[in-house]
Image (spheres, rainbow over the protein chains, first blue to last red):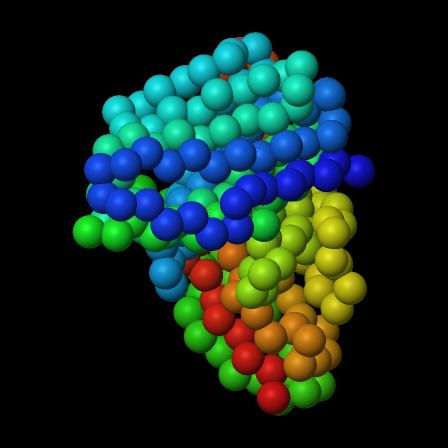
Length: 112
Length: 117
């Protein structure tokens, strides 16, 4: 089955700095890569996603990059703010919608 | 448009009791799923459904049953609760994969925090 590794598990940055979270996967047939943000005690929420036929996607301060050859994708958050503090999960869809594997999460702390 | 609605938000069960966690969505999503979230374990798939009348097992299905009689509803049944089922349960829905580009990221419900004593 699909193996998804997410790093780092925790990340502390100063407000205004950038944060990068990386996920690697094993199935070269994987075709969809979403990122979710989960604030403490809340539900995960989709923040950005990318399909396998695209190399990069941006939405204001967040971006996702995909390297299909190396089988990894990364979440980039620029100009971090305290409200970016949360746990971020990557996910990988392979072989169709039912084969979804989540990463174990990255706890991001933005220090004011 | 309420999105994905889960009930109850909190529940305490005694070992051996049964109960049903409710999940309903009003977005006409074909795909619905149940996850459990435990500290340090991320999100693990329990059961999923790609449409009314169709269900299948995920990564951790033992001790749980599901049914999908309508597009909107996907209840999760705990048959005989055990302390190992203490967790936060999330229902999630999405469109089925569409090569034409329809977004199929998940919409999650607000979760059910279950404690089995």
